[in-house]
Length: 213
Image 1 (cartoon, helix red, strand yellow):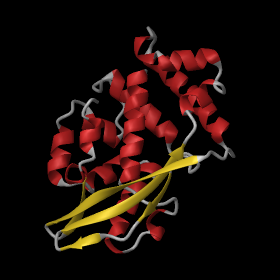
Image 2 (cartoon, rainbow, N blue to C red; image 1 turned 45 degrees about the vertical axis):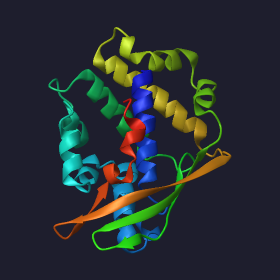
Image 3 (tube, rainbow, N blue to C red; image 1 turned 120 degrees about the vertical axis):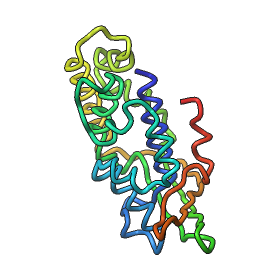
Image 4 (cartoon, rainbow, N blue to C red; image 1 turned 135 degrees about the horizontal axis):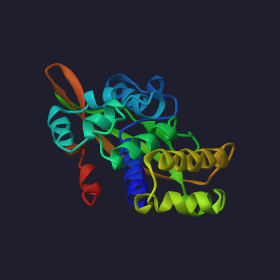
């Protein structure tokens, strides 16, 4: 299950870099609204397919080569999907909406001209070790099962229940909590193709940080 957790954290941090503040698109100006809409689709609406369509075509093609990826983003849940993808989909759906006290973001004004713009991003995440935080607040049996889910000899529905229980306890634990936040800045690149602005992780150099996944 550590692999699932690492992938989820990578996804959340990667997308946080590409998006703006807690107010969503109403906080963004001009072309920066595209990254705010991207955020809304992923973190508020849970519409991964809409977010996928906002990315540059070459990056969609690259991600589409991952076995089961398109089924994952469209939300299909059937035996044709690998159990890993199905469980990751359950985890994603339980995480939405992402609590605002875990990630805060601000979108700056786009910089550049022509068909390529750079959008500066400031994001904040808790300084606290969240694994330790959750371990102290999720019952030990559920935490252990969640952490070792990929090795657990159990049917899919039982694993699905473990995920729901663990994330439900985690979200209850952080409700109303105020964390000391650490901030960082990065940029996301917008490119215009066929008259439409698209998000490019590759040109932003962000994908390189997650090559190990």
